[in-house]
Length: 441
Image 1 (cartoon, rainbow, N blue to C red):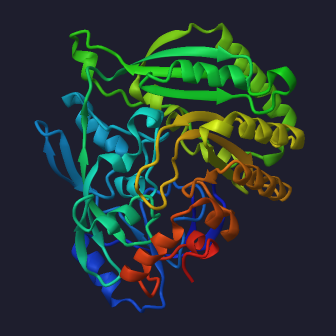
Image 2 (image 1 turned 30 degrees about the vertical axis):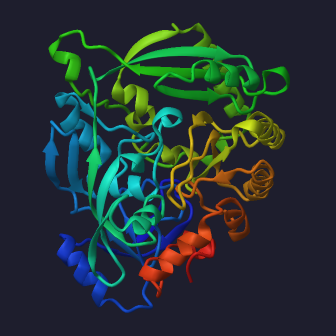
């Protein structure tokens, strides 16, 4: 079958394995030739090639809800369960996932493997901070349990390890209480990047914080943006307080012609969006889907970038040089005319102990770029800007980072390799990404 990530680049041919349960998965892993590589695959929402390999081990049928303890606020479920399905079950019980990425279509296994983050990392950290334990099938076929207390080194390598230590089959998660299913949103307009940083710092106590940027604005308007702050709305003692509203919207039935995405159209869109947000009310109450997953209401939105797909470029730079570094990146992007509709800025809190987790204290910027030949030289230039400011790129979004850039920016890669080689000396688990980055082969 043809396989690709959400960015639709790169594309490869792979065999899809869909084990019915953990026993079938163990049998498959232990019976395969050591020369055959495979990688776990959830919902296919990583953007690049981190879930592409000769064989893709799907968690499609590992999607059972096993135990929900409302008193202890814990959920045990299969790795194939999607975050949106958890919300459907938990929100009516006034329970919630502590960390949510930008889409609810991500599987639990994928969320752990990528150690996803959300709009509240500055206060609450990453998804794995709330993973109590996981069950993992190793390269030997053995099923093991690991957590921060049991098989701790394997746990720290698996959370954020992009599936390279084994296939996650089950997880035990911590939940949090919420007063209602709504988010009270407040928006602040910033006329440039420095002003946006000031708004974020002044509102660092807000539960959720994310800014949209006009990446093609220049001069005194460079980095003009809208910051969206959010808090869980209080209960109004209504039946609808815990109603989960799943948004439905339009879909993109086919890939749009890529020539429609150019500097002119993107500049017009960004300028219009900024002006529209300036006119809107600064306060609103939204259902959680509208606040956390605005793009999920447009099915197959990745087709908007054309048949060649797109590359999402996300990096983090430490706080002390974030303004300078991100300014330089935006200047370079604007100069090259490779604008992005979706440019998002967030603040990160401290890093966790996981060896390959992406977040660390600082600011992270995310941009989407149409895939075209001239893009790759620009991204190489951006890599050097990020490295010069002690930053790094997100593995779950990456489709082309070099081994040199990776190893220069992830200081714990050698410690990860020691654990990887201990549990998987034959590189049974490998992806196109891990081969490219020098972690396997």
